Length: 294
Image (cartoon, rainbow, N blue to C red):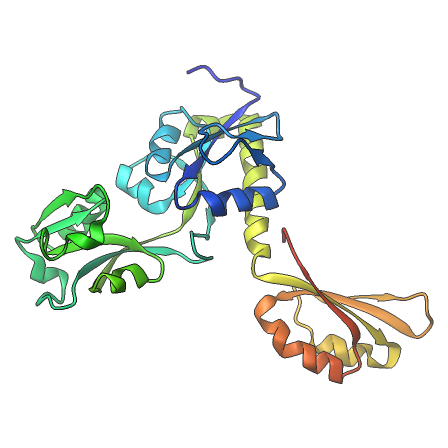
């Protein structure tokens, strides 16, 4: 497959991560269009070609050079045994900014309470390689069969246990399953083909995109908080504000007044706003961020 050296072919995960990945790309400054059904969405960067591919397959296509780079889970890199360059870890998932887990689960009424109890039993999973390696590490021999979907409903009638991916465990609980162990924890990885990453232009482009995407995720839990303060209250107000370095303080046109702003974790805002108000801050504004690049 011959690819123009000044074009980066970039694989994005189609499926459960697609919506959150598109949102992250757009916050990073890349506008994608073409509808949810296309496998080749358009992007407003002439140096990029986007390919939508299932996350399970991306690491193989990156390894073999059909894609220069891509986003996929650490779990699928392990499952495929892919030899790729891991450029960055991007902690985001379908429902939030957290790792996902592959877990070993059994029916609530099952007598099994550990992996050792599954000696000689049957396990269904989409991650066959990961599961077999996990069983081998624990000295357990069991039959592992590939599941084409709806894995949660297969126990106990068809299999004794399942290995399934979860963020919150709610789907497992809804299907009367309980977790007995974590098989693998996974986060999204920005990966590159080894040869592509040795190319000066492609490496620069890959690192640029990775930096922007990491900036988006850094900003996800932070906001800018701005306020106006009288001169006598500046030190008192500034001491309340957490910040990445130090709050920015600028004098206003009106003599004796200053503007203070700081980047803070969103979860602390509700705690500090009343204290800021009590300390003399007025006109307090909270602003969302798209990117934070340290």
